[in-house]
Image (cartoon, rainbow, N blue to C red; front, side, top):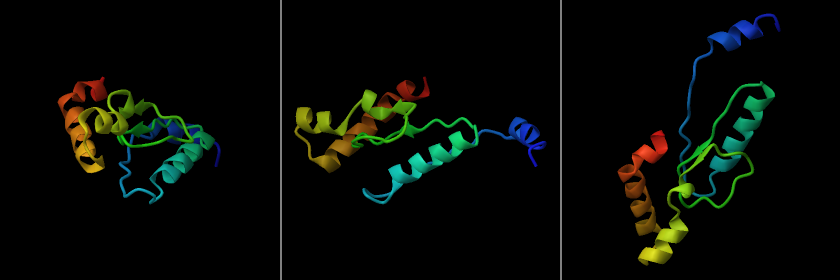
Length: 102
């Protein structure tokens, strides 16, 4: 019933999802489809990327950790492999958590 939609939108709270999984498991596809769905419903959606190894996105990302640190840069500058680089990136994010919360 379209008459209940404005009331429903006014009472809906904010919610979030954390999407995790191994490479190639469909995380980006899922986030892209969810963003499309939310836009179709005229709802706000903000995708936050916390993967410093992500290549690209087919949807808008509101906050991207790669603006703070990227795996590629860490591996090159610190001569680390991918696993050590990811650990460094996550520790760096935690040490600079104000960047995320601002």
